[in-house]
Amino acid sequence: MGVFEDDFVQPGRLLDESDEAYWGRVQRASDRVEAVTEGAIAPAPPNPPVCPECGLEADRFPTLSQAWVLLEPLDPVNVLPAHFVPPRQRWLINSDGVAWNPWNAEPTEGAQCRISHTVACPGIEPPDLWPWLTAMREENARRAQRLFNPPRTPTLAKVEMPDVG
Image (tube, rainbow, N blue to C red; front, side, top):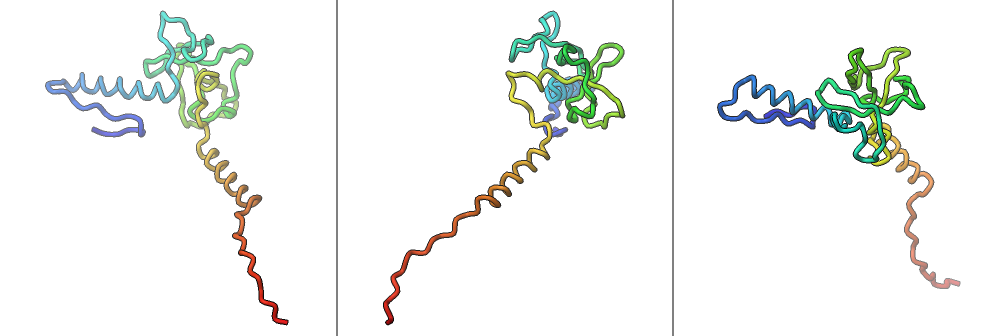
């Protein structure tokens, strides 16, 4: 058993399972993990393209991992400049209508993309799109707390001094 991308555990091989059947199962399992990681959790046709969390309709596309993704509708926004969208949240549509996520690939100048409905859904806790920025913000909050609210120094008990004259 191997571990890939922290979220995928390679399934064990069944007794008398052919190589082809085994690697097919591995591929399907890894595709499913990738789809969930990317937010490709839309209901497949013939179900309507409606988010199960908030009930809003969105544009549904098949993905390279054999899943379905709901992308934010093109109304009122057509597409977004890709450099405005965080890595792993940029969705592109092939000429054959298949949606794919370029993950961390740097967008080319002028590139445009769409976003998954899971990022904008009011019924889903938003993902931490920039973990490094979140960590920096938390550290800055701790630093600011120390700067503007220094810890109180313990007060010494008032000791009566003898009158020495």
